[in-house]
Image 1 (cartoon, rainbow, N blue to C red):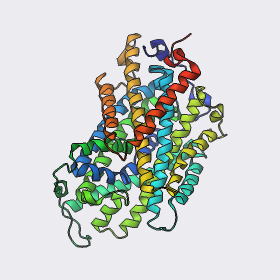
Image 2: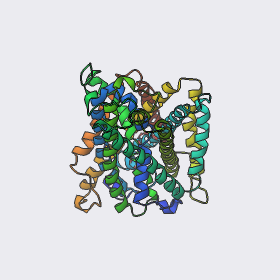
Image 3: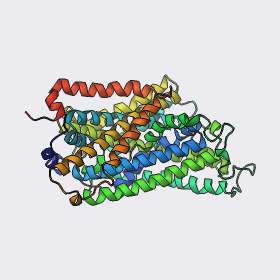
Image 4: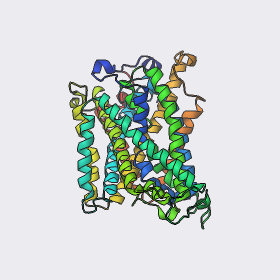
Length: 478
């Protein structure tokens, strides 16, 4: 079945964010920090320890390089689509116009699932770290406290959210820079504060007793989904497009800046961590950042970094809640969710959508009856599955969008931004995403993501077909 017609693509009936009540109050500075805020969370500060333990030091670096490369490919596709359809919560708009309404519907709910579950993982991770200071307080108590704080930040205004996220992001970016600089200096032999005066030199930790890949290359493959989860949030630029001033200029600028910074921060940080801590001594019980700063000998490093990392996790949850609410608002605006989700406050905030999205984050409360580390890894895996599904939708949407645009007589040179090397970029990105899903089938601790994610997607398609019929699901008029 052929995707939506070129005519539909050329004149998409999308709702103007100004007409719908959302405000264009964010510029490139906010866009970059929202994307950075969404990305830099528990995926780097906590689950990077899991990645190193499974893939080994060198394997972890390779996994993060693969992740950064896929992010670049997805962002290139996203940039072209976000300018063509600058609406809030736009991922399902891309898919609905370029592939078909049923795919758009499934994409929207998949992305909502991604962030609703991710919020829960950020709360759980924060609760785990709070136990360093309050070991007798249950993790679920902290989940409730943090949920109340983030709900308050998002309920004020999008501009207030953008400003809060800007300063949240600065704190965690400073932590990453500190890790790279101080940890890197220690690897070169400058570690005067180290307790015993010893420290791994350069990359000697990369050579393990079991070789460069202690768990084989399969160990690298099974961690790719966790790495993709760590990079989830980069696509938030597309979600915020509808509340951005001058999207044609702001979005490409923010996209380029985000990709470059992610490459430096993520790969740089994971290299320092892998070179400093033996792969057999990392896990989910403590942030690798805390371990590295303690090894370098920074006074009160563990407590300072614990505070910084909790702030970073809440920042990522803050971005996730913003994304969830906008996706529900966009779904309701398209008639694919209850109309109550369209209701806005006087400040232009979709408060009902915000409240319902927070319910997903409260899945973290399960940690009160199940081991928090187990809950955390399951949440990460499900969120990773969801974000990979959305990335696949973005790349497929770009492929069909560009093809239909050219077939309808459009000139590629006239596009305000165009992804390079078409069709290689969307095809390669889609293929690598599929490979990551195959990889988690090999990991018993992550395979639950497939058991939950695949039926969820199937249910979205089935509901749409049942409600609207086959022709409507494929985007066929009449």
